[in-house]
Image (cartoon, rainbow, N blue to C red; front, top):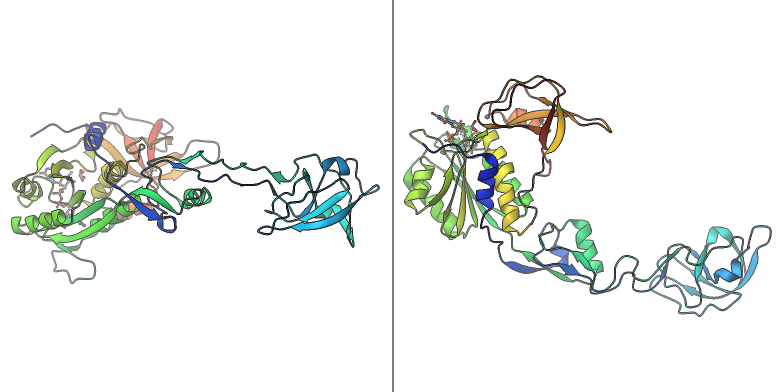
Length: 411
Ligand SMILES: Nc1nc2c(c(=O)[nH]1)N[C@H]1C(S)=C(S)[C@@H](COP(=O)(O)OP(=O)(O)OC[C@H]3O[C@@H](n4cnc5c(N)ncnc54)[C@H](O)[C@@H]3O)O[C@H]1N2
Ligand code: MOO
């Protein structure tokens, strides 16, 4: 049997040679959550003209220099500049234009006196405070100028990035098509949620976690359902993944060495080009990687926590790589301090489910759960992080430095 592959090498091999999926154009209104295929440059300058940041009066700074409540300066009101109804001016000496937030600054004015510092008498405004030139004015191009690079290829479009691209004049954006990720549960013991289960059956749960994770990474999840432990069933499901032109097939279970663990053999019969099988990882040792034509294949172990950990460590980065994200596979671990003593580790890199004790200005203290069985979703759901223990790490004491991977609730 092949030796166990180190986790970092497994990830590197999964990401090697991944080519991003094609680009497509989406309306800006549907762009949130997508990943940019190209840099986004501003088609407009923002703001396109100097604007007032406050409600008040556009004046010449020289006119109001020295104005005070005791010695207000009288100015003649000549016009109004409102957002969408700008006044071009000019503002002459001794004059003021009523102005509102977001309205264009009229020519000749170089400052805005806020209305709280003024009083009006008919067509006259009394400025009770002076303002240096530029006060309460947003100069043209304050945010960005036409031609500036606003966003980079590979960036995920959250709401504020979409807003930025829209402000930059883009009604549509070039994004990567959503990679299609087919998720297949395997095992005669599995029933769908809500289906009646015989005494020796359980509910298929892992596929839901992997589908949700794939979608939140930016993919389209395709539910291939449950294949029984027969070649006919497995090969039928593999054919459906190919028919759906999946970019990635994720299988769950049947990855180990038992008599009913047929997934790899079924894939091999269909022409699998095996990359590797078995990683020095706990939980998740029987992980398998390969290619079936243009489709990447990740065979995940069936134990629920093993599936999820493999999803976080390998499926998520692979989807990000398919989306052309240059950060795909970047180390997201962070330093922490151990909350209790731990024995020496064996040869598998461990990802222990753990709670965090956090306080401002100090490293989080990580408390691994007592029960680390890879079947226990209840422990995973209560956990905030995975405590990473390197292969052959020596025994460690409470307070020792360590590294953790926070469990992102968005996944
Ligand atoms: N002799 C050996 N036995 C096992 C080894 C080994 O090296 N030698 N490895 C163990 C490890 S580690 C793991 S992990 C498991 C994984 O094995 P499989 O991938 O073949 O998983 P299954 O046997 O199919 O299932 C394991 C467990 O998980 C349940 N399961 C499977 N799919 C789902 C699903 N979609 N939703 C919920 N639960 C699921 C399944 O019923 C089993 O209870 O192998 C060890 N054995
Ligand atoms: O690797 Mo298995 O995932 O230890 O339970």
